[in-house]
Length: 302
Image 1 (cartoon, one colour):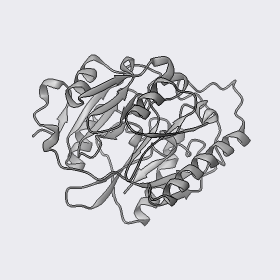
Image 2: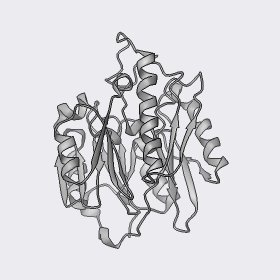
Image 3: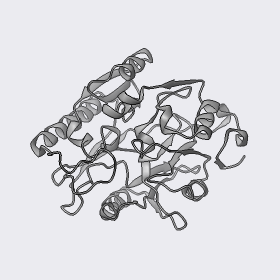
């Protein structure tokens, strides 16, 4: 079996034959104390729009409380919070600095990101130190230009298979290096729409068979690849995906099925309920001004 796939004609495996993978149920957050919009990194960042810091902190506290309540119900395991660095205004978006994984021998590893924007590169050392402190092996990328962690690397539910969005924040040469490091097949998905600069803004697997996406985010080859690996592909309206970050939802599948989502969606919420999820709606509007919502604001790890 190959390890990298760039078109559907290259698929040489059956999904059911791939090794299984437990879903990560530990949650890492980073405080919003130093969150601000200092420059324009994506189409959502508007320097003329005022950020309400007090509201942002309240919204983050509600997200943290939601995760803690799910841990109290044994739906999640531990919730850990890292203090943010005054020099790292975007550290609250902690899905981007790393990619945790379980190797075939059962050991925990984490791939460190190579952030596209200079102002975000200082964030990585804080997350590297955290993972090293809990026994993870740190893996470095030597031949990759850019890679933005779980913002662009999304595993297939319950399987050892990774989808890697590239073209905007992650370079295509990351596909081969990461697949080699982790010894796992990777599906390359080209992102072509500036509003969907990370895969986690436009691609939401909810089960082994079903994925929600916004088709305008992807190249034709990427769409064909996705259809070849999911039995059910549900296209979410672009307006909803952009205005409500509806595909930046965190879907949890453990002892219960829970989806944490930005408040106000219609189609996405209905689809999730139809697929058996309890939907928890929160406000993340202040963070959306910087281009992120629920999924961007947490890191799930083993």
